[in-house]
Image (cartoon, protein in one colour):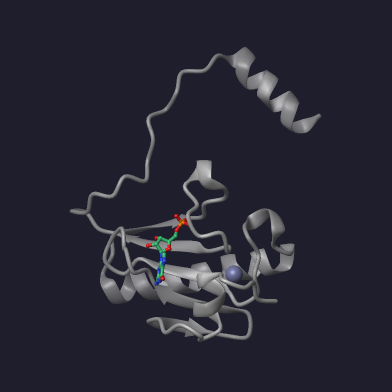
Length: 136
Ligand code: 5GP
Ligand code: ZN
């Protein structure tokens, strides 16, 4: 299903043009218009799901399989030195377009996007408490 006024629904279904790298029945892969690095692209499902929480599990699995295929092809073609997969859910996590997408970000020795973080200091007790919260 499509959602009215969703830019990625329009792109994924061809109502708005994009630079397509791949298409099948379920997904398109398009080049990001504001790339973090050379070749930064997005896997977008044709049906509208706001985020990972809403995606059917089998479609989420298919997205990861496609990510592997694209990562291999793009790394080879662009002579990248590494690759990040990034997938943001919710505003606090950096999501700005609320239609699921998986970022494909080729990395190069000289590039400079900030995709890492500074590790926090945490005690064993705190880790245990968090573990218990998740598993309860
Ligand atoms: P988010 O921050 O939601 O994880 O990522 C949204 C991404 O979509 C950003 O990297 C942004 O550059 C990209 N983007 C937003 N609007 C468009 C668009 O109209 N076309 C394309 N190709 N990319 C877009
Ligand atoms: Zn949508």
